[in-house]
Length: 161
Image (cartoon, rainbow, N blue to C red):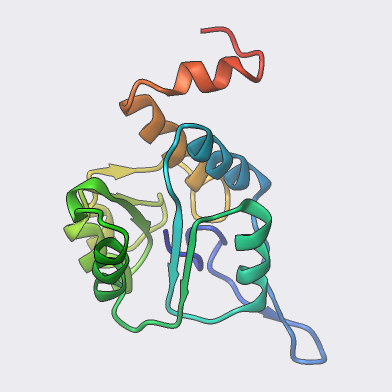
């Protein structure tokens, strides 16, 4: 998954000291935890480099973090090759043109509701929620539902099937 515009609302704020601030939706974090309970591996591929992303990555126990690549598809291919995945086995969610090639090449390309038109058109699944506002949670639950795992995982939280 991408970060800015997907795990965040895409805005970047700076303190008077020049420090960058990002806000993450806690619901998205739970969505990632649900994926992990379903046995899925998770990765972040972001074109920017940020200490806040590193912190969130560590808090959530995301498997792989790739920061700074200009070519996200190349980063996705390298990640897949390094860990013996086929692109067809990967779901990727993004919001804008730097994500487009990865969305088109992944087995399941996904877009957040407020993604660029080109990204939404290329995606096989588009969330109802905007980036940074539960879109990742929605995508995670959709993936788990497609695999027939969602009800079992939710039942551990007391949700009736």
